[in-house]
Amino acid sequence: MQPEHFDLLLTGAALVGVGPARENLARGVIGICGERIAWVGEHVPEGATADRVMELSRRIVCPGFINMHYHAGLNFVRGVAPDLGFAPSYTPGLPQASQLTPDETAALSKLGALEALKAGCTTLVDSFVQADAIVAGMASLGGRLFVSPRLNDVDFASVLAGERRFDPELATRMLAGAEAFIDHWHGSSEGRVNVHLTAHAPDTCSPDFLTRIALLARRNGLKIGTHFYNDRLLPEIVWSFTDDNQGRISPKVSYEIIDNLVFTLGIHYFYGDERDSNGEFRKQNQVYT
Image (cartoon, rainbow, N blue to C red; front, top):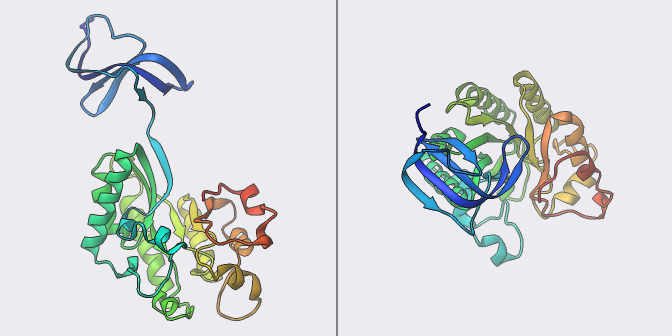
C-alpha cells in the first residue's frame, strides 16, 4: 500500500471526543487532505508524508462547538444590553433588525458567523430577518447551519409605538416565504445547511399563526425554535389576558400548539417571574438562556 500523504498533519495535541466512542487521546495525530479529515490516531501512519506539519503540544483539539441560538447579524447592537441593564427588544430609538437592508443583513451575518467560527463554533442555529440574504455568505465559511426566517405576524412598527397589532396578510406572506425558503435551502451545501422554523415569540405570534407554523413544520419534518420571555412586559402580557381578542398567547398555550416539534424553547429567558417558578417548561424542553 502506498504511504499516506497529507496536506496538513497536526501532531502532539490532546484530542477530545474522537470517533464514535468519543474517546480522548492524550497525544494524537490528525491528517488533513483538502477539506477532509483523512486520519485520526495516536501515531502518524508509517511512511506518511505531509506538505505541512504543525506541532501542537500542550494544545487541545476538539470537535467544533454548537451555538444553539444565534442571531449572527445582531452584532450591530453589541454592548447595548450591558450598557442599558436589560435586553432592549422593541425599544424605540435603538437600531432594529427589521430596518436593515438585504446587503446590510448579509454582511453583518457573515461577520457574525466568522466571529463564531473564530471562537470555535462550527455549527450555528440561526434565525434572522431577510434570511434568504444571509445563508450563502454564512455557508461559504464552511460551517454547518440550521437556519430559519424570523416568523412573526405582529406588526413590529406597532410594537415600537406601544401597541401589538397582528396582521393576517403578514402571516400569509411569512408562511409563503418560509415554504420557499425550505424548498431552496433545506439540505443544501452538501447537507451542511438545513432549515428549522423559528416562531419568534409568544408576544409576536398569534395562536392561529403558531398553529400554521406547526403544520408547516410537520409537513416538512422540521423542528421549531422560539423565544420564551422576550421583553420586560411579556410576563404580564401572557399571564393576564384571557379573551382580549388581540391574539396574544401564553407560553403554556404556545407549547401545546407547537407540541413535540419544539427543540429549543425558552431561549433569551430575560424576563420571567414566580408564575413560572415550577420550571415546567424547563422540564419538558431544552432551554437555553
